[in-house]
Image (cartoon, rainbow, N blue to C red):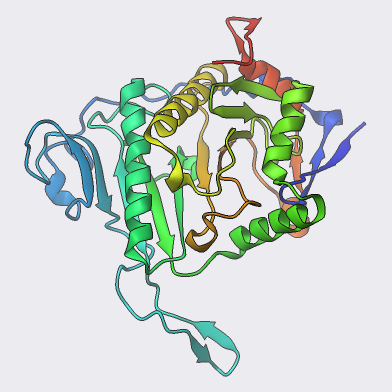
Length: 344
């Protein structure tokens, strides 16, 4: 029997279409990935082409190498094809006495994750991924101190179906002067739950998932990874800190390094078991003004792009998934055909 499931976090409903559900292994992509070289002379992100990007805003480098030289491990640069510009007016204006507008002011940066052209988060050494996430935290907190913006979205698009246009491993961040409606809605639902129950909906979700076990993918000292009860799409994965914290930028260096290795392990398993699926991940964190609230809890959402939304989803806002979350979690828990314990 198909199921309608509702998320306690978003209040969104999803349909788990069990009558046409696939077994987890059936989602493995039947394709051959094109082999990429470790260096592409035409790639603007490869070492030696630093002049093809705007000057870097942050980098991890070897020794005393000069800024914008080739001796880097991680490099953060303004997006050359930016969605928003770093300067302009923050005033909101009326248009036609009805609409509202303002200058597209914001920060749009690219985090170049490795000098190598042919790696990804799931295939990099753990130390490299740790520096990627430390760079996220560094830039997040620098933008917070800037004081002009309301929120930062940190995200990664992997593959054409996820919206990427360059193959070199990279992720992005965008800071906006407004709080997007989607984020405002998440905050409102979390606040409503807190008012009704006196507790954080994310903390309570973790307690339920740890007790029921069936959707757990892995667990480490500081992080919990699970398939959401009302997953929007096959193999959707949530990574949540066990310690209550509304703001990603407040994570310690130790926690950030551990988080990096958790994300790396999850993506490594997806890469191996699903044959390198396209995916998006996003860090959900409170707007700066809500960074210390008791009702919100930062997290990472990983969404493999294994299906395509159609008319019903667009018309209703209800996702249809052909994967049962409990089976997806079990599949990702298993290594070499054997179920692993919850700990990484």
